[in-house]
Image 1: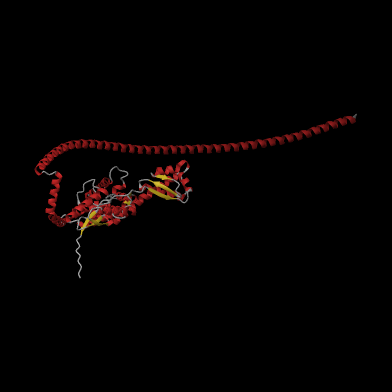
Image 2 (image 1 turned 60 degrees about the vertical axis):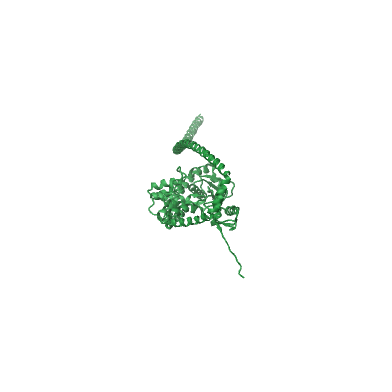
Length: 520
């Protein structure tokens, strides 16, 4: 019995111990699980905090990008507004120009109508007078025919033959006497006579180049110059005001435009862009602006250098800049600045020979084409534009008058004006000054000689002085002194009628009498 009780107690105690053991083990295991869960929860909180931090950073960056996008959009809008304003200003200027042109056209139309009415009125009176004169002539002819029993042509021919026989020697002597008297009187009127004689020189001209070639290292550059959907080339043309022609010509791009300054700026800018390699609208704008500033400085330096070489001082700085622009202007193949300097030197030389003021003549000749620097921007002829510019800067009225009259738009009133006209024509028409091919030159001389030898009694003819003089040798047995004078007039009239030539042509008819005898 005791044994059983002991056994039962032992079992109970063992079971209690086992129970306590397992309870302790369970408690420890449960604590471990709780600790692990707490760690996981802490780790989860930590990761959640990191995610929240990343989300905050991402949100901040997103806000910054949104702000940058808004700023960029505002800049684009502002730029678009500026471009719109510029376009509006340009349109307004064009509209003002059109309005002024329309007003001028209406004014000229009105003046033309008035002149037409006046012309018709005068024409009517002239016709009435002509009819009266014709009636009188017919009446006189009828009376004369009744008296002489000769026709008008027969009477005229008889009268001319009698006068020629009777007064031939007297006419030749009178002609020679007039020449001698004219030479003697020329000394008294040297200034105006010589100036007007030289002024008669004129010149036909050739066409002007309007294109510039830019060489490229290779043809791959052409695609970059054009840009995506033509963006680069459109920006370049808009900023420079020229046309860019990209064709199949290898390693070359053509720049076309009438304004030589714009073409030069475009050429320099394009060469810089090609050399730099960065070709996009923003870079194009920067390079073009830099090039324009450089060209403006170059024009100032060219003007100062030209004025210094001419020995002309006291010119306004703005006028010097305008003079420098002529370095980038050509006229019929001539560089206008070099042509102006040449005209200045020629005018000074002519003035010193005929007793006029060389310095005033030099200044007038040097500035005579100043209007060509801006004639593409201002309405009117370059002579009148140049005169307005010189008046603005306070130059002497003698110089201003010479400039505005050098193309006879205003009548010349003093020797300096005639001198400038003559020097301008000499510089333009002298051999080599303007473009003329050798073939054209030789052909012109040949036509002149052939036309001269077509007259009866002409033995031979030679065109000399680059076609400005033709010497005609006639047969003395067929052409006498009076006939030689008449022949020179006929040749001159036929040249004027049938030939196109630069300047004036002097016709010199030479009649020789040779007496030959043999001594034995």
